[in-house]
Image (cartoon, rainbow, N blue to C red; front, side):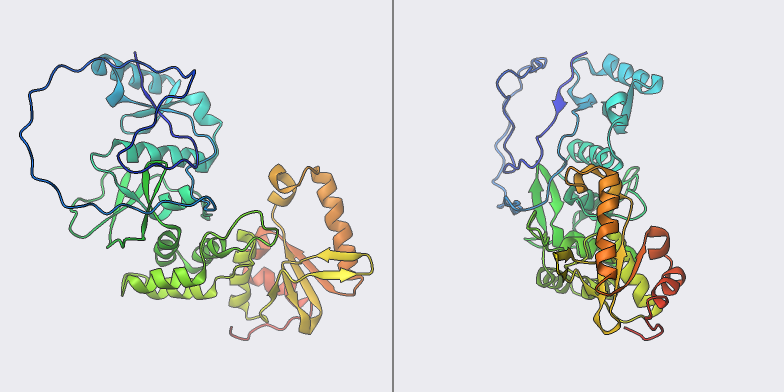
Length: 379
């Protein structure tokens, strides 16, 4: 069976209507020639279609670093027999059906992260619709690499305008809402809601804690200059205001107002929400601390009136190689211990916690009260 693979390298964008050309040395399957078609009757010209804006070089909007090619049933030379062969391979476990009429090798699929698997489904659904859908909400978050607590959904989410018609079916959820000229971007040939629109949509749909995680990540200003911010508060507020009154608009506004551009991890965001619940004093984020040896670091939370610092550390700091800067997990642990000792010697009251404490206001209250922080005051 002859398959034509659908694959666009990461980060590459092209105007709507263009096609990718084969690279030198690449194998290009030859499709069966189509029979000659009778000439079509001329059609009246259509009104100009809005062209989605495209990301610039500093954006983080990308499908993924490298996704495997997808085999589409529509591209088979012998569709009837080959369709049955693909179905048999999926039943046998040698391939995985990622969407209707779209398959990926099982061994390759198993090697992907949860987000990459979901991106495959998003890409497959986008490529098999009769008209190009606008991917939105959780699906847009996966493309923009925004964090989602609790895992990725099974369905692909899209947004359609009120006059488009259609309804949610199977593995595709359709949200009905107006889309502005700046609300849609083209990423790797897929129409996606912009970062600002995606954040506003999710802030309106998610519980407050999960919404803050998304808002914080979008606003983050990397203190090391490794990447540009994905958006800013003014853009979020402008996008929110442009939608008028919509379902969840008050919830979205609260999450946007609570968002911070210095929260560097989902655990820090979740911890701030728990602090708000227990009513402890508002902390300063990422404030530099130094001693006679020089800069110690920027603790996640600092309460200058109580001479106390707090660190929200998940396992990623120690287990994710991309965050260790070439160090082993043991070296990271020793460096963190030395850093903590220097902070305590300033002197500073010090507390460290992980996810099990950060998500539980009662447990975090106990931890912060041992630092001498009062609780019970509304933010």
